[in-house]
Image 1 (cartoon, rainbow, N blue to C red):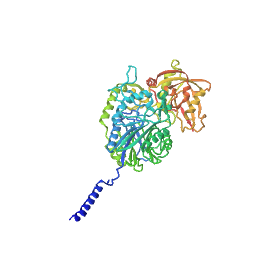
Image 2 (image 1 turned 45 degrees about the horizontal axis):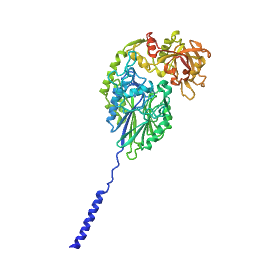
Image 3 (image 1 turned 90 degrees about the vertical axis):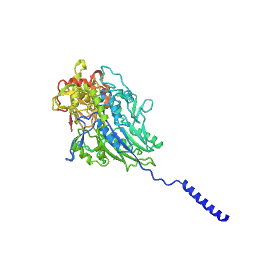
Length: 595
């Protein structure tokens, strides 16, 4: 029996050992599912909290190919509704503002020092943001105050009001920018933001247009440098990659344009016809490690595929959003670009034509069609905007003048809205004791809206709110002197060598000239006249600009040389005074094109 027992015991022991080994072995694991992140971006909001009648998109007319219709769009409550619908359909999501959230705004934002816009952005659900050039309009310190929260002391003579409803909460979302550098060499904001989703890290790298010092009043960017966008992004991308962050998104407040001028916008044409503008040069110089680029600044809509990655912009003023559904390999941490999808989507509002709205939704691919169908205004945001509007109403609704026609901003050279502002500034400063100005010049970017009869046919009353929205910056008037030769050179520099087109300063009725667009630089300005008389190169001329231009804004460096300066009233006050005369649009351009 002993001999039989021993072999049996050995067999049992062998079986037990085999079972133990099997229990300890790691079974093969199924590959992890890809990680998805929905990035929802909007740009150049400019404090457009209300769904105003003038907020529209030039949408391709479904019944007339090659023609456009106006799609009413925008409003903070509707933007929040689309964001909510997009988030509901995604396991993971992040909402970002691509700059110019504030600055250059309607009264409902500017009157309250943009605290209202920051408050509403919190309620929309913004997660991260970069500054744009307009964030620096009031200077670095005021920007940091608005973002940090708290109240600024109010004075009886102030045009603005801090904390109109309750204590300003500040931004609940961080700002980031890699190319805004302080005097000590540190960036003003963190250069990037890293978010972790299901164990995978995604890096967002920010940059602001390097031209900011040329388009913001110099005092607003004092002590700051704006370095090359691509170089700053590449350096930060390398740093993040060294830390193991493989999925990278660039958010840049700089842009471009696509398509054919004058034809309807098609912002989802990935063929990207006729791409032009700074963003495409930046993208060409950007490291291939960046997987997607969200752009801004030019207020255009496009969705381009360049070198296998999307470059997107969703127009401006809260009328649209850009969406990218990133698919990330959890093993490598890299974005799978072939599986990533993206789309620009409109923000419908209560004014959107129902038939057009349904045709747009029907043409959208899944899942975005259902997202648009499900989007509803967010009541909390609508109520907050209404509270700010009520607080602004006593000033906003006060009639301040009349107009005898509609003033528009669109023109090849000088538009009627700009001519209105320039005439107002000349009228305010032409008296000898006000500076003795012989003409005025206005930058087109400072005329923020048309001035139209919203209540019907002209003539009509215009309100403080409408005028403020047209001239929201609070610039003062400055009268200065240049010689005729300097004046001519300044006008020639409206299109310096290397610039594709001219940035025309808009003159008052007392200055006129021809512009030979095909002539070489230095010979484009022809028949330059002031008060109907040819300009004498050796004579001195007194003229008016706003304080932004007087400090060399928009890159008009010659204006820094202006002599015998005399400060004047605020630009909005000059415009209000001029509106008492019930001006009519001047149909005659003061800058005539010589082809």
